[in-house]
Length: 247
Length: 247
DNA sequence: CGAAGTATTGACCCATTTCAAAGCATGTGG
DNA sequence: CCACATGCTTTGAAATGGGTCAATACTTCG
Image 1 (cartoon, rainbow over the protein chains, first blue to last red):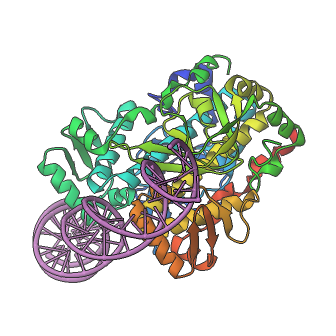
Image 2: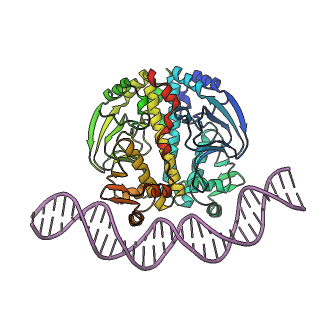
Image 3: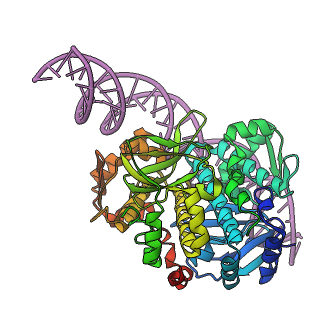
């Protein structure tokens, strides 16, 4: 089941069994990608969309000097470039962190799906809206939090998202990222991430070493991150639920 | 024509005349709002969506101490909370900057529209995706630019968006915002915005006084903002265009 | 074993914040 | 039409968080 984690923990229940099958059968190809591989560049025309099946990916923008600013990190079950379907171009680059397995959906096939399954369309729309909600939270993170809060916030978010799909438990999860990757996601330097992580380790808040994260004190971490996971759920749309069966 | 500026300069052409009329007739009420008025709070259930007809609005998140982080600024023609339609709740507050005129769309009516006009639905989806693209650029702004770059970037973006709808020309436009509002959008302090604006004024880059902005040197402003307006257009979706006529 | 990438730490520097005070508009009521 | 309140802007001085530069250690892997 390639699509088994799509919206899992959010509105997965709103998808009928039929719709799940339709989605599963719409996959046009499956690929394995190596770590640190840029699979798509800003501005290129695209004609497929990518569901991340296993592994971690990220989207980023480059600044003038070629330094990256991550604008999102993706976990299994995320449709990483579904917006490329209506938009036909990406406004950012798309790359893997660790090795990944992805399922590709041809836009022609998606277009047919969209004609025949309006409810499924709305679920896809919904998933891009969750994405936007996460963007907003990142803006907040960069705008109002200091370095420690930003790092704390990122780990809180990843923990919450990975928990929903069964890839984190008791605050432990794998994350194939370097300290520089964290830095690029938080808008600070790699050197400073190192210092922040040391402090958090000393205070027994959070451990992160060689791709393994462990949250040691969720309460204090959330406090310093001002983290509230509500935005990750899209609040269980009543509208979607009410329309759920007729798709 | 209340909806006349919706997607103007982006994919307005993709809307058929019928669709424009349908949209126009779907307006359930029109309201005038005073300046600095919070019309909606995070978490509240919503059953209408808001098209901004005249004036400026913003969305923001509060931090622990009640300070705001703006996550977007809106200009006439923007659907400021269309995501509330599938989501049924907002993850942020929504407020006016200056006095505003808005058109409300009842979600029940939108639901009917969505059943009957799949192409219009996709255009609405598209407009929420533009929103997300702007979010990404804001993340970049906060993550990679210093104070001057951030302010420059914000003014470049507003100029570009206002130009599309005919509310800016030759780099001049009205913006009913205080220096503190700018600060809340850029993740810096009001005091520092003041200093940045003074420097920009001295260098004859940008003037902003009592709600009136004037870009004096677009080239240099763009350079310091690392601004490229491509993200504002969603690159004229071929898919939307190809489906444009069949409503 | 050597190479390349990654992590760690120290010292110094600078952009931005913080705190504080004063100046300027704008509007309201007397 | 003045007096005062309120909110916005401006400026200075001191404090600080995070950046930069540079050197050293650790890991992983061919």
